[in-house]
Length: 429
Image (cartoon, rainbow, N blue to C red; front, side, top):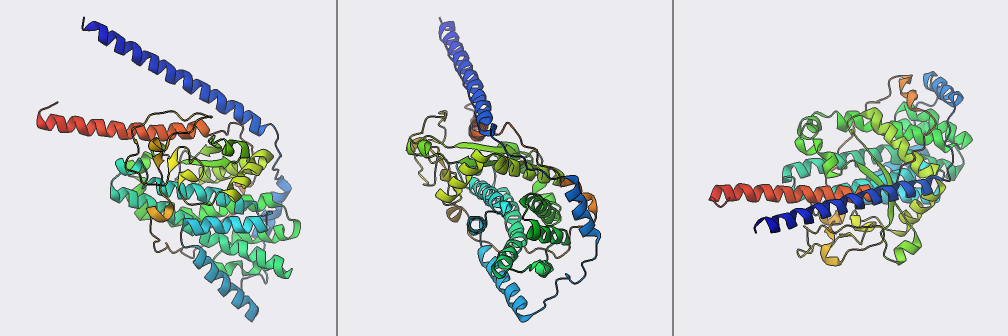
């Protein structure tokens, strides 16, 4: 008789497993189909070898009078103003992210500004995850603070280097004169000078965007990734080696569609997964891939811009999925809820996952100061200057939700383990 309930339980579990398998296959197929629909219309992002040779010749040539010396009082005042503005806007992830978007809206030819805005949004979401529904149950406070410091260091250092470059372009446009001889005043790498000068002449955004991707990843390599503190306390830690589980390696671009928003249907997400953050070359190619997703597919570009302009950045994942996340710290939230989020459903408030705003999660902290050493050493870095390859499988909607589910399962497993250990200690197990 006792075998009957056991058989029924096994059957129920088998049916549940089969249901999850079928659901997973359906969602995977849906992702592939949506990737196809989003990528049918595409634009090439070419960069021919002649351009590479052009930049190579400029990088080996002497700078002549473009040595960064201030030539007038107005130059001195301008540099001082840009430094002050950069420091003011480098307050936290919110101010940086908004600053990128403000520049892009006025100067849409600066492709990198939009890319930086969207990637910086992801940085903010990763920061608040550390205080959200799952991470505090998996990591101790020391690890949480260290990972935040890593994310914040990358975010603020890139801004401190890139924003003055963007502002010099704006001022050059305003007065109708090339001001890029002032780049060295801000500690900008010599690598960037010929790219800005050429962009000023021909307006081609592709090589400039690639150069900025190459530059910013090199900029944080020595200052963050190879820093002894981060090397020993973060990169060798189990917490960082578990970053795929912690979902710190996903970059997603929410795609705004008015009909979906009005019907409370979750927005679709496109993006990619970075496998190895410590690998400089991989980060550069990853950045180029994101650029291809954004600017190689007109439908994606239009929808991503619409999201950026309509939804203010708060740092909470509720910015893009208010149907699954909430910035309200409701202790009645069903953290163990295992309901599936499909393409056409929204969850009740009681089962949404906690995702705080950045201002609630993290107070402003002193910024990491950049060293002055120029990373640029030789022409080998130009090997990254190639035509952008457009990825085809880009829909991340299901994979992103699946990643959140893995976090949930990790928490439940941790609780089960701790409960079992407690029972064994008390003799109840």
